[in-house]
Structure formats: C-alpha cells, structure tokens
Image (cartoon, rainbow, N blue to C red; front, top):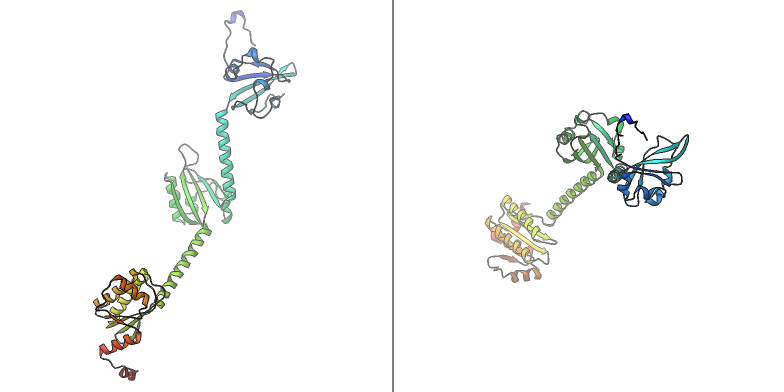
Length: 379
C-alpha cells in the first residue's frame, strides 16, 4: 500500500469494480473487499480466516484448482452453488520469492455464461446437422462472395469449400439464371425458398437475409432432394401410365360398334358408377353425332346392379340421343336394374326396350326397311 508523504496531500482512494478474494494454500481467506461483502453477504471480518470453500460453495469444481504460481494464469469460470457463474482471474501473492497465497479478482458472468452455453449448444446442433444431413450451408458477403461453405451435401457434387470460399456465386453460376436470380433476391433482403437444379442435383433451398451490421449479409441452407424429386417424377410417370391404361380399359369396356349402317351398339361391361356413366354418355353422343347414326343400342347385359343415380344417367342417355336425331334402345336389362328403374318411378313410355341385342337389331333393321339378306349379298 502506498502511504503519501505529508507534503503530498490526502491519499487518493478508489473502489475496484470487481470482487477481490484472497486465500492461502489451506484455502483460508486473507482478503475480502467491499464488493465481496456486497455480493456474498459476508463482512471482511466474518470472512477472514475461514475456508473460502465454506464461504463460497461451488456447484462443481474446486477452489484448489485456482492455486497458481504463474503471473499469467488464464481466467477460470466457476459455477457457484447459488446458481451464479463467476469469472476469476488469479494472481499469486508473494512474500519475497515465496508464494504465500493467491488473489482472485471476480466478475459475475452468469448472463454471459448462459449466452455462451446457448451459443455452444446452437453450434453443436448446427455442426451435427451440417455434418450428417445432405445439406449445404453458406454465408454470403454483401456483394455475394462466399464467406463460408460447408455441409455433407457437398459430397454429392464436384465442389469443395476451398473451391468456393472467396468466390462469387453470381459469377460461378452465371450459366444458371434461376440460381443467380435466387441469390440476388436474398442479397436484396427478400427471404425466399425455391426448389432448384444446380450442380447436377436438385436442392430445396432457403435464403435468409442476416440481421444488419453483420459480416454476413445472407445465409442459405440447401437440402439435397434429388432422390425425392426422382421418386416424384417416377410416381408421376406411373400415374400418367395408369391413367392412360384406365382410359384404354374404359374404352375397351364400353366400345362403340357400328354393327349396321346407321346402327351403333354400346355394350357396357363391369362396374358402373355416376362418373363412368358420364364418360359413357359423352362418348356415345359424340359417336352418334360423328357417324350420323339413326339408332343407338345401349346393351346392359354385362352389368347386374346400378344405383339410382346411375339409372337416371342411363335413361338420360337415351333422351340425349333423341336430341341428336337418333333412336335410343335399351337391351339386356337385368332384374336388379329393372327394380331400380321401377323404384325411381320413371315413366318408361316412349322408351324402346328389348330383352336381347338380337331383338333390338331386328327392330332397327325393320324400322329402317332394310333386308339383312340383301346387305349380306353386298359383302
């Protein structure tokens, strides 16, 4: 301690902005300043001579670890039992050449420690994701230059981080206008997401502008979705094939046959619902109009049961053919279909119904005044 001479005036004093705790090799407290009194609720008189481990219990660690004979010891963070974290900077206290104790200068870094732990956890999570998922994570400067490039996703490409950091993607990918425009939007401050093809792969990419006053102006994350895109394309091709096959099956199951000049027959086979009857009607009416048919025979021999909506569609089909100038005829009605039509209460007067296709054809030929034997001699 400096003692001023009488001619130097009053001594200059100040309070240090940190806790000061000193102890000897047996951990007995030798120094305890006013800030320590404020922070730990013990006066210097109460603290001196007592064990620092007793006065300031730790959640983990040991005060003995702070003992040092070096003047350049690194600061140590200790978690105290009261939930606070303190940073202690330690200096040896010497008596001559002998170290007789240590003086610890402490600052409460609880908030900083919590932030550091969170940052460390975030770093670990990011590292785990980047190193194990097919991701590419990038940070860009304001002009677009790569500041950081990393991620397991790069393994599927021909590029390495060393080939990209310091380069400008606006130049590297100038031949890919979609990528260039995507990056420009991000650099302009517009968060965006796009599935884009680049480097021979498909990427689901997010561009997120960084907060102001950061070294990075833009951060991007790109997930390799090439396999998913390939599966989707394969699935779409299969669906298109199935749809084409279904159209062929529908056409085969409801063919329109011109069995005689001006006489069309449409045999219906299989399950019939409202959607299919709508398609059948469209196909029948187009054929009647295109071939200028006089008769359209709807043969129901191949179906046994229909619901009321379908029965209505079938009858509507016959009415629609009349509007095109053709006569609609029903044949091959099963008992179940007949019961459904009766249940509807439909007035069948005016409808031509025959039990078999043979009878319906005889009706058409007779109505047209044709002699089948004469037509047979023409072939």
